[in-house]
Amino acid sequence: MQFDVIFTPEALTLYWQGFIGTLEILVACLLIGGALSISLAVLRVSPRAWVRGPIWLFTYIVRGTPLLIQVYLIYYGIAQLDWIQARWDDAWPWTGFKDAFFCAVLAFSLNTCAYTVEMLAGAIRDTAPGEIEAAQAMGYSRLQTLRRIVLPSAMRRTLPAYSNEVIMMLHSTSLASTIPAIFDITGAARNIYSDFFLPFEAFITAGVIYLILTFALVGLFKLAEHHWLAYLRPQR
Amino acid sequence: MKLDGYITSILEGSLLSIQVALGALVVAVVLGLAGASAKLSQHKPLIWLGGIYSTIIRGIPDLVLMLLIFYGGQIGLNVVLEAFGYTDYVEINPFAAGLITIGFIYGAYMTETFRGAILAIPKGQAEAGLAYGMSHSRVFFTIVLPQMVRLALPGFTNNWLVLLKSTALVSILGLPDMTYLAKQAGAAARGEVPNAPLLFMAFAAVIYLVFTTVSLVALRQLEKRYTVGVKRLSA
Image 1 (cartoon, chains in turn green, orange):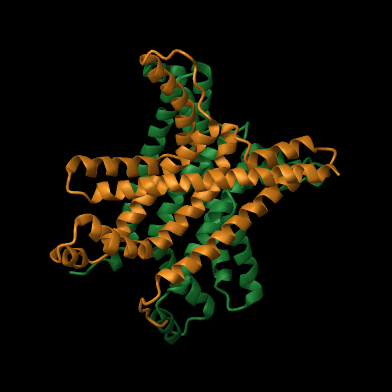
Image 2 (cartoon, one colour):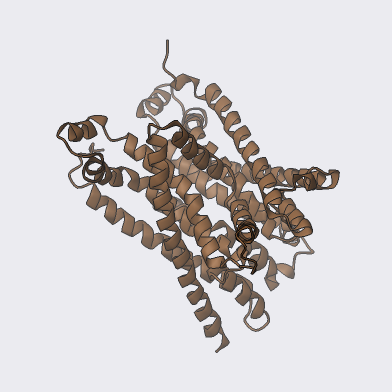
């Protein structure tokens, strides 16, 4: 093992840049996917079939196909369409398809959104009837009930499952390295591997960084659960 | 018609994807059973080994592990062979590397699924079996295993679906699977077939969707079969 190759300023800078790249993609797709999933989850539990049907179809397709294919579909498929390329100099959002980062974040956001919608929708369906009855007894409108009672409660109860999703997303961002113009931790490792032909050193270093990030996320979510799920713990 | 040729090649690639998935599933189930037994055993080193395996593997992205095992295994194997005096350069077959790597990764997820299922079986049942003079292996095969199948099925279904989708990653190792061929077809047919990259990748996506749908239906039937006689709360 020649780990001294890794501990040079050049290699460490490469990994640092990759680390930043991974975090950028992760934060962007979690923010976009998360924000989108809250409204879609409400539509997903709608009593009207024509409202909940399309959302179901969207989550079913996204959850039933590999993320790598979704990334390729957007980066090599949609971004290469004549129709898109004819207008990607004009206006947003078409200009975005010129940018590899935009394509990657779009693919990852849609993916995490689909999984989060199903989680949140499940939690909304499991809301205790008493909570809603209490809101109605207080004279809350349907929108108020949703905003003040149902969503905060469902989002809290989704927290443990959502922590798994965030970790899956962290791992999924490694697929961004399959897009040539994007640089993340895995991309840094692949660079070092091809420069020095040292697969063990290059990929083990990347693995350790991911492992540390995973543990950090697990710890953060433990804290979050401690704070927001305090009311579910046994009371003294 | 040129289109047919591309479609046939992608369909042939789908057979390879299925082969990788099924082969990896066998590896994963074997490793999962071994891992679960290790984590539930009385021996400290075995418990640690099982714990390290399931924690580390689940904490690192599949792609990084795959690149590590594929490129690293290549060098590692030759170093070991050289130490035994075998000097010819041996190349690992990417099919075997992909299959074993995916199996090795999902073995860690199966370990947790099987361990949870075994823990959910009341201990008294195994103890009753032992009290009747049944051997440990007989208790495992006639009492624990049939119930474990029922309890592990939901987790197993989940793991299988994720495993199936992760086979798309072998295309990055250069294995001519469905994703690889769809990408190639998209690049080759550009100009010949309008919007070829999107078309062929969407075709591959639809085939994956068919695979996952068939798996879901089949495993739901299996779950029905295994939960015959289980009382359910009427909702």
